[in-house]
Image (tube, rainbow, N blue to C red; front, side):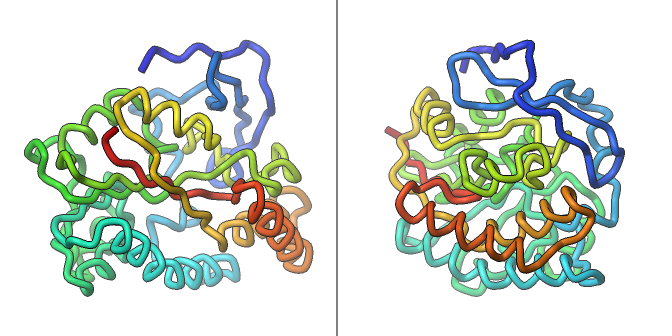
Length: 284
């Protein structure tokens, strides 16, 4: 993957609503339908932007209405995700979840017979996962070559500072006939186009990259992976719209958010541009 160059003029300017209140630009990558957060915090300062009770993927919080919605959506999707994987890769073996959060996906995978492994850099999330019997490592560097049958990253790739090095590591630890599943937000979706700079899934500066389906296909093809299928994460349009309404108006406005989610999914049924997409890759 060639070093990214991007335009000097921003496509959008977005606010960090979770931690700092700072504003960041989204700039278009040259020759690729990809947006890049600018300026990007230095790697040693990125962790500060995750230090918030509102960063829910590192907690099991159910305090607010949006927390409860998030947890319900997460639980509803667990079995669907496992089902997608088992229909695509029927032979169970070793599965690695990168960015495992508090470990719920691995708990669900273990119950269906997978040998589970996980990585999560956030120490608080690792402690919560440990209480569920899920031991997580901080990074993937210690895993042997060609070790995993399946590797998953559920809304994690957009956080990775060095895409090129990370993709090389995925290629190293995945078996030759293994399955790679990557889920990321899709800025081509109807809800993204509607909310623009208020779209919650931009989540600057924690999200360093913002992918389109075309960008995902090209980036992974360059690394020797073939896109075999993709699945829409149906519920994301509703949760993201609830947050986006809050960022835009100061209120979650459930009726407006649900209406936007319905319209977004309806349009995506023909276009394929769901609010978030899970991509399934094999080596080409």
